Image (cartoon, rainbow over all chains, first blue to last red; front, side):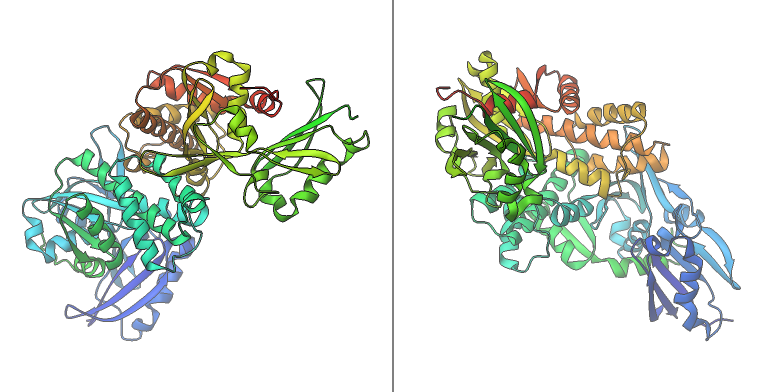
Length: 300
Length: 300
């Protein structure tokens, strides 16, 4: 019998594998994301896990994220919202991989009141993990936000994921900063100027008018002596602020917000929420994804 | 004495020269835009005009647009709004070019009530041209919109340009369609599907929530059988609809709108305005730029 299990988060841009022994991470390996691995996903997985196989076959293997996408490794279904952890786990696709039982966890799908569909793959693992680690989140109604390229704003209630909305703010920001005539086309070097721009963008966002506020990122460089770093901060503050204003209009009362993700990005969102009078707490995305991947079989 | 004049519109992406004789265009020439010509603008201009010089030196040469930008040929100032045609023409930069008096027309600058600056270069020529050709536009208060990469929404009053706002909707649309995970990354092939998407995007825009409506362009392809062409139309309708909703919130009553530009794009805006109960008329951008470049010396 094997003495270790493998869990992994296989996203668009990278594969992260964790070797688990007695509930602890004892080793990590990385590999290419699904976007790069594509049709060679099986081979990329075998290569990433290879060194561990010298110690025998893993007891179980469990993967979440884009591994289960249509263009991933093996397509896993979407579980429909509202979904409990049990609904979600039941929907996983399972197969034998070199003698080990391998599951690719399902994504989640929901439909809004206008009939517009939405989907996630990977973030549900973090959300279920967060609720398992923080039992207060599994009681009552909460808003959980996972900022990133495609932000997920999720309503949870008594441990179920009730509904969610994807907002591609991170992708839009990267396009505007790097590819447009509005952004600096470079990473900011001067943190103080960037912070000043961020605050100004947040202030402007209070009016909730994104499109008519974008061009200031360029005009203020031309006519008001602002720097490229200021412009990067301004665009970030404007987008995040407008995102929060829109979500508030959509969801009504959104007090008690939990942010999950990269520490720096969560701090930005916390500042932007604060600017609109909303408090939040932040959880580590890495902790939550591991908690979700190692959810005990009997988790509700 | 020369028997012809030359006027030209030198934008970011192309140079268009017109040979004028007795008030009529008798020939046209094209050349590279300022983005391409850059530091070699003088040479690019000489090359574009060369064939006409065989008939002698032009009487006058007048250019508008990015020729006068900081990174253009010779920098021309911005005239401040509110500006009459006379204010604007007076601000041109003039120099001798191979024996001919050459003017590069000024841009316009304004500052909104929050102190945020805005600028245009080239569009003012079309607006003054439109008012000259259509005397009703030079009386009373009107909203003139020039849709394109960077849309200009301009308030004119009794022949003056009072203020304007740049909205980079066209640039954002191109980024989303061609470079994002939301768009089809290709020109639409099926006009009917694209039109269906456009109408759906317009409908969604009525709620004025751009960021939280973007992801449907992708989710509906994944989960509701929509095509890439549909997605391109949806993004276009959503962006244009949200732009109009924002401008209405900004300007209040905006009845009696005049669109100037490319016929197909003006038709899109007319449809989007109509969807929000606003009527408009469209003028040809080419006619307006020529009228502005050939404004008589005594125009108000």
